[in-house]
Amino acid sequence: MDKKLWNYTFSILLSAILLLLLGIFVHLDNNNVNGKPMGPGVITEDTASQNETVQDQEIPFLYEIYDKQDEEFQLLPKFLQNRKRDLVDKGKVAIIIDDMGYQKEIAERILNLNFPVTISVLPFLSDSQLVAKMAKEKGMNVLLHLPMEPHNSNVNPGKGAIFSTMNEEEIRKKMLANLLEFPEADGVNNHMGSKVTENIEIMRIVLDEIKGRNIFFIDSMTSPDSVGYRLSKEMGIKTAFRSVFLDNEQDVEYIRNQVRLLKEFAIRDGSAIAIGHPYCSTIDVLNELDIILEAEGVEIVKLEELLE
Image 1 (cartoon, rainbow, N blue to C red):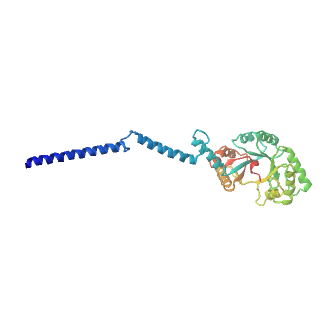
Image 2 (cartoon, rainbow, N blue to C red):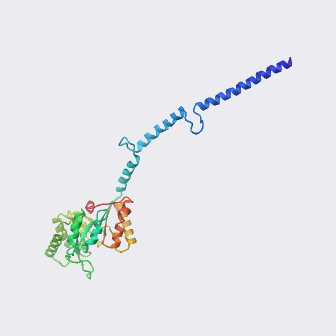
Image 3 (tube, helix red, strand yellow):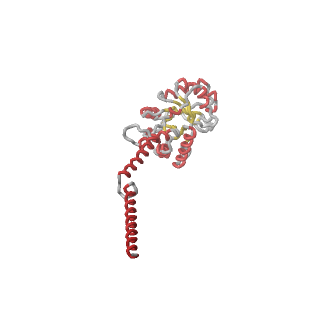
């Protein structure tokens, strides 16, 4: 009797164990079907639904950052457009090349640069009028590079110069002759003139002639005490002043450093004007100027855009 009871108990216990094992197996199988990981590359209806949910969340996020202008969702062009706008806002510079009029070949090299350059031409030289005409045909600003007396009396400023010993009539006659040399001139800047530009009486006569032509004056600032810029503003003449001389030393690395200084002025003040000369070293640096400046977001513009 005890043996029969034991066999009956054992059978029940074994059945219970089998039922328990079967239940565990079914439970695990249900978990896999209901979205648990099923191994790499396996996609169920639930996992596909989850992926769609992620995409639905990402697309509105991107649209919050970028405007959708067209049916095509083009992120890169929009980014580049915004980047260019940000860079342009950093500052503007204009480049003046003084002492032009000696050789048209040099003028051709400068006028073939990839950015606008203002040509400042000395009067009464062999190629003065030709160089001025070439620049105007290229759409560049042209200046009369007006010779003026410097403090160093041993230095000759050249033909057409204004001297402190002249009376008003002599100054006006000299100004008329200089301006008739370049009827296409957009403005005037001083050649030398550290002495004359400090003299408010002489500068008032000079600027009155400039105002009568409805052209502008750029103060080359050959003297820190020049009155040209301030007096021009008082007289209602469009004006600006030189920020940097590029090539006081005819050395490429020196000129590059001056370009960096020009860039810093433009970023700090919003704009800056550089004056250079037709030296080979200057032209070499000018050939890389647009890369140096525009990489920093500084735009090279025509001089007339920076007038006050």
